[in-house]
Image (tube, rainbow, N blue to C red; front, side, top):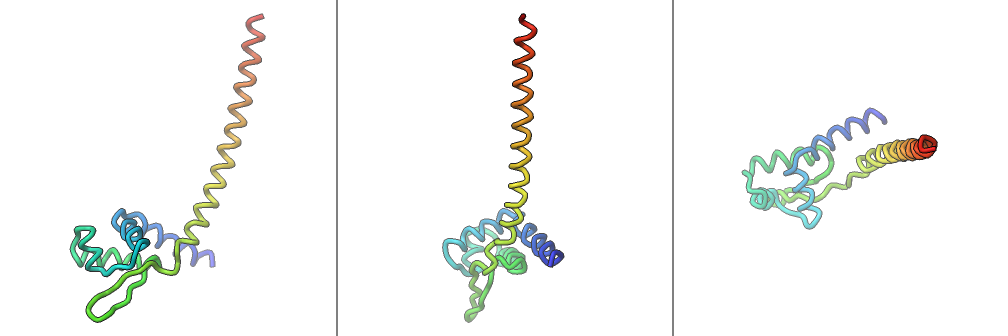
Length: 121
C-alpha cells in the first residue's frame, strides 16, 4: 500500500509540476473539453496537448473518452485526495515546528528584556 501511494504521488506531483498541465486541470474544473479545444486555448500543437493529457491521464487526474473522431477530457475521479492528505500532514508538521520556534523567540525576547533591565541598574 505504501509503495503504491508513493508511486501514485510521484506520478501526480510530476504531472502537476508543469504549468500547462495545471492550467488544463483548471480549465477542466470549469468544464469538460476536447483535446483540440485545449490545444487551441493553450496555443500549443494537438500533439503537444495529447502528451500533456496523457501524463494527466496516467496520473489519474484526467479521463478521456473518444466520441467519434473527438477525444473529450474531463477531470478524473482521483480528485487529488491522496496528494491533499500528504500535503496536509507536512503542513501540520511545519506548523508545529514554527509554533515551537515562536516559543523559543518569545523566550529569548523575554530574557533579553530582563537582562536589559538588570544592566541598567
